[in-house]
Length: 277
Image (cartoon, rainbow, N blue to C red):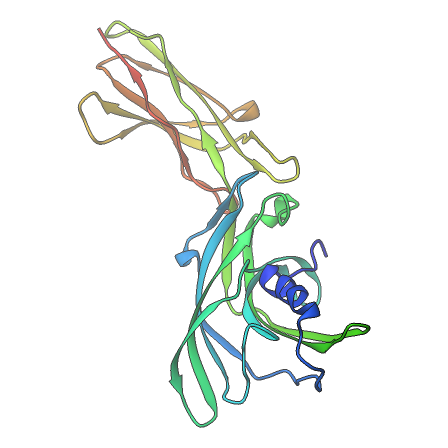
C-alpha cells in the first residue's frame, strides 16, 4: 500500500486531538453509518497536473444513529477515494478539513444530514504511478479518539472504520497542447505548416511528457469569426509532436484539440493567428 493516511481530516484531526483529548472512556463500538447520494467533483473527472494541489468538492447524505454524536473533536466522519480494495489498498486520498453537515431530518432512531467537504489531492504526495489515473472507488469513514492527559502522563485510544465501494470517481492526468502556424504572413494559396505538441502529466517524474499515438483535430476560425471548425485529423508522433499542412485561404486562427482518454484529460491549444495576404 502506497499511502496509509486517509486524509488530513482523519489523520490530522486525530493528531490534533492527541494532547487535548477528553478524559478516558470506554472505546465506542462502530456505529451504523450510511453514506448515500455521494457526488464527487460535481460528477466530473478530477484533473491533476504535476505541481498544483487540487481540491475536489464532495457532497453526500449521512445517516447516523440518534445516540451517535459526531462532534469533530473526538469523533469524525468523511468521504475518501481509494484504489484497490479495503483489504488491499493501492492508494487512498481524503479531505483536508472536517466536513460541514446540516441536519435535514430526524426520527426516533436516526439523524440525517446533508454534508459537504473537499478531497485534496497533491500530485507529489498522493499520486505515484500511471495506475493512479482512472477510476477510483468511494468510501465513507468514521474515526474516534479518547485519552487521558496530565502533566506526567498521556494515553490515547483511537479507532476507525471505512465503508467501501459506495460509488466511483475519476482521476485524470492533466494534458497540455500547443499550436504554431507558419510562415506568417503567407500568400493566399500557399502552404501553411501547423506544428504543436501534446504532453500529459507524468506523476512518476513530476513533469509533463510527450503523449504519442493520440488522435487530435486541427481546427480553424476565420478572422472576425467566433466558431472553430474541424479541418483534419492528426495523430501525435514521437514525443507527442504534431505537424500537418493546409493551403492558405483566409486570415484566421489555427489550433489543435485533443478529446482526452479514460486516463488523460482533454486539452485545447491556444489559437495561433496567420495573416493571409
